Each structure stands twice: as structure tokens, then as C-alpha cells.
Length: 558
Image (cartoon, rainbow, N blue to C red; front, side, top):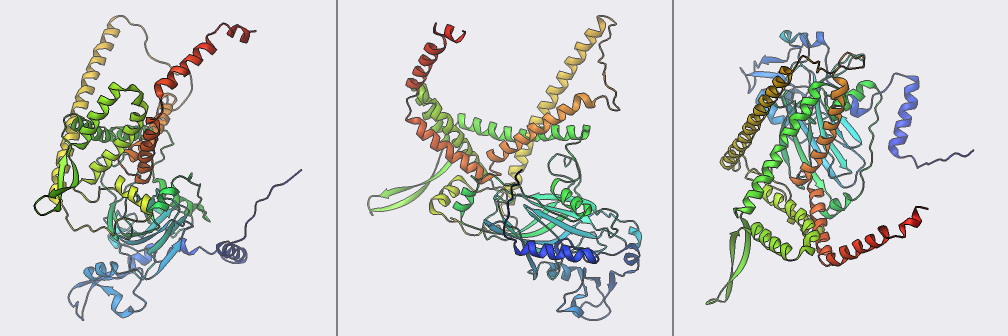
């Protein structure tokens, strides 16, 4: 027989891993640095430790001061062991000192700092005696994971700049998400860390070299809709900055198929942390009526995209939309040019010209069809870029086009002022929520009417006789509905996966793919414009008729 081998030269990480593995055979197992949890306390230590007292001297005399966790600044131990709440908050916003650089990508770097959490639930027993959640944050991005230090016995932990809280992730893909989860540390090796909540951060629309201070609510999962009507399980505050390669390189990288990545861990306990960080605490592959309800709620949430497209279509037909265009206007007396900002219904004008052209020349239909795909994506990008909320705006089609031509970022760091456009944002949000609420009320009314019609129909069926119209299952199962509803759940999952991709492309949540599809559609529309479709279709049908329906087909039957 034969054996095929594929080998590569060992990297420094490989050598380091093997050295640790060899040492672990003869002594107590070592835990990798990024999985190490420092700062946690047991129940007895938590009850006996004093975390709050009143300052008896110094500038904070008479004020409540708190024990800094996981420990004081090594360079200022005396002055940072006990601090007021305000000073702890101020210290937590200082620049981090210890950065851990991980990941194998080369498209850019993600600088992430975990600042703190607020409103966490108490996951420990003995809360009345001071035993509270020992929180740490787990981070997963592509092929690597990391953890912060543990902040013991507090529901609002703050991670100090001298602790393990700052990480540099090297990017492999532009569309990869950053997964964050908060856990309650459990020092017992035979039990799991208690999962609190998670969030996934989409990095696609973040600008290069812009510092973001972000606060996210924590939930059990993000792939389904348990959030509707549910209170968040606390919040997490992070500081984030992207250092990216040129935009042309980022765009071209999306033409490659994403490679599978693996995160290796030593124990089931570590695997459980990573698994819940990425997918949450809800197993959507397991049968359950709750999962089916989550999928149905998610399908209802996609009505927002429908409303978005409906408003755009109505505005297009009624010539409501307004596009901004800056044109040079000559001034005759002074022989100068003055730039005027004009607004006019550009999309309605284009739709009218395209419609009358296709009617007069049907050969343009294939070209127009692809052009409309690109046009739709450009229109949604324009609408989103005009949103008064700067956090909702995305990178535009023009931004990517200039970046592709020039090969570099065309804009500098983005600046967002506190409470920027808050009045316009509130008015726009109120109007939109009223639009959604009115549509949902109409849908509920139609559902009630349909239910009444079905009730009347079955009443008529029952009045016809006493026949047995029930369905009997031929399989023995604890849950007789599983046989019928589990396939429905699987199909709902497939539909939701497809709709997630379509929605993300249409509304520019994945701006790189949205631009590629829009730009590719325009190129296809341009190429197809010059093809004589009438001639090609006529001769294609002529060949089919003569070859397939001719009398010589009798020879094929012999």
C-alpha cells in the first residue's frame, strides 16, 4: 500500500505547544495564558473579604472607597488598592498597558479593550453575605480566543488597564464577527463556568483608525428572537479600534472562499465556554416548540425589510425621493463657476426612462434586470447613508468604488458627537415604529379573521356527522408532535438562514458583499446591453425545434 503525508515546518507556536505538552506529562498540568483565570475567590473567601469601607484619611476622607480588583496597579500599589467609585471609573478608561497579540490573519488588526460590565445577575449563592458573581469575559474571533481576568464579587465589574483586558486580533476575513460573552467563574474543576450572556459585534461598517466606545446589552443568544419582551442580562462596555489594510485588498479578499477555522482547547470546561460564546445558550438544532416560535418571530422581524422596500417603491412611483447632486453653474458677468446643491427625484427619472426603453425595445430586458439589482442596492445604500443616526449609516457604494479605483481609504477617522442628531433620530424612530405597529395590527386583524373562518368551517364539518376526523400516529413517542413539527423546524431554520444572508446584503450589513454584487450587476448589465437577444433567442428556438421535434428523433428510439 501507499501512505500520503503533508508536512510543514514547525512554527514558534508549535514548538512552544510541544514543550508545554512534554512538561505536562511529568507535573501538574499547565493552563495556557489566555485561558488562565486570575482573581476569582471561593465562597468563604468572598464572605470574609471586605470590599467597601469609608476612608478615614486622605483626600477621600469620609467617602466610600472600594477594593480594586483583581488587584492594584503594580506601579502604584499604595494609592490604587482602595479607590472611590468615580476614580475606579476614571482609571478603567485609561489606556491599557498589556496587549496580547493573537490570530493568524493579515488583513488588519482589531484593538479590543474590555472596560467593564453593568447590571449583571448574581450567579452565586450567599449574595446577602457578599458572595456575588465572579465575572470574566470570553472573546472569540476566527481562529483564536482570549479571556480577561476575573473580577470577584461584583455585579458591575471594571477591568483595570494593568490587568489582562486588552487584545489585538489579526483579521482573516472582513465579515468575521467578534463574539463576546460574560461568565461567572467557577473554581471547581468538576463544574462549568456559569454562562450569563453574550453579544456578537459586526465589524463590517466600522471605519479605519476610529476609536469606538460601545455598550451592548447581553442576551442568551443572538441567532433567534428570545429578545422580544425579554430584559437584557446586563451590559458590556468595550473600546474598539480597527487598523486595516487598504480597502482594495479588503474587497478582493472577499472573492476567496472562507477557510474553516478551529479553536483548540484542553478541557471540556474550556470548550463549553467557547461554544456558548459563539452560539449562546439556545440549541436551535434540538427540537422544541420554543425554537419554532423563535424562528417564527424572526420571520416576522424580516417584515422590516419588506416595509423598507415598500416605502422605497411607493416613493419611486410617486416621485417622492430626493437625491442630492452638486453641479457647476457658470456666472456670466464675472466668468466664474458657482457650485449649486440641487435635489431632484433621480431614481424616479431613471425608472421612467428605463421603463419606456424596455417597452420599445424588449431586447434590453436581460440587461435591465441585472441593472435593477445593482440599482436596488445603490438605492438602499443611499437611504441608509441619509439616516440621521450615525451608528446606522454604512459605507456607501461610492466609498467602495473610489477605494477600488484609488486603492486606499478615501475618508479619515469618523467623528460622532455625543447626542448627535438626537431629535431627528427620535422623530425618525417614532415614525418608523408607528409604521411597523400599524402593519402588525393589520396582520393580526387578518389572522383573527382567518381563524374565525376556520372555526366556522370546522363547525360545519362536525355538523355533517359523527365521523372520526382525528389523526392517529403510528409511532410510539413521548412527544407525538415531534414527528410532524421537527421537519417544519428544520425548514424554518433553512429559510431563516437564507433570509439572514439576503437581508444583510440588501441593507448593507455586509457592505463588501453588497458592493461586489452591485458592481458585478452593473458590469453584467453593460455587457448584456450589446448582445442581440432577439436574434439569439430566435436561433436557439429554431435549433431546438429542428433538432428535437424532427422526424429523425425516430432514430433515437431504436
